[in-house]
Length: 320
Image (cartoon, rainbow, N blue to C red; front, top):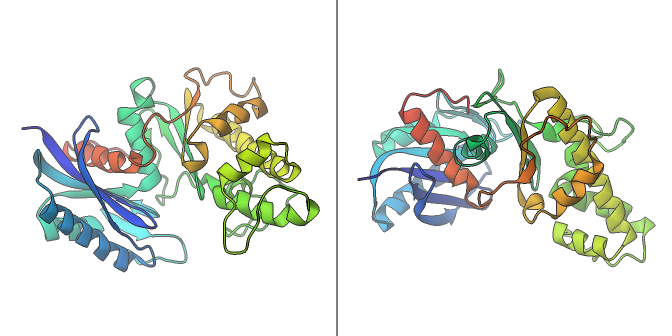
């Protein structure tokens, strides 16, 4: 019988639970309600989701453990979920709690670390052990994989590149306390905020701006292609910021490939335009190219959680 693990991906609105094989095949999966109001509530929701899945689904393989991806800082070696974000910190030894509740070994990691780990085993890692994974969605984060290890940092906080300053002259204040961070210009939320910020300067824009509704990236693309000046300003600003971020990461980590994930990158439009803002001398050693992940963005963290469990069960140190 094939060994499998139960993988869990905690998102802002849902918890995805599935049984996954070492090859990354998802044999079955189910979505359950989620919360990220605080860690304790989220931990209980995870337990409820796992319990419901085990009651509702036949296990197809030889279940050897549970892998979990969560948002925020995680000490994978200790199985400790340190915080959702700095203002929501309530350290929980979640892996131990899950092990006690379900009598299966459990490992957990951050969701972007999990995605990078999935890339390392199931994606670009089959070509190179040195790459950067950049996730651009509602927020921005990245992970550097060097010599097949996901860099974790001294406080398990490496890769929070959304707070890399890309505009020294900007007056826009980031939640981290600095000004001009890339997340302010290039995340899905950031582009919406920039659209609202500059809307009064472009009264003839075709974009519909309403209170309590986010202007989507797809709306911005459509307006951009129609040469809408507001969309052009916001999206070009975003492209320049991500280009600066990407080239900074390339200079720092010397990757052979750069892989992009997240909702903003899904259809390849952003990357196709991004490359025109990159400096040839800076990217000359990225010999394996820049590409959007081939892994399904809706499943990559689930596969990352499973990959983590398979690796850790064998006693391999992953720095995830």
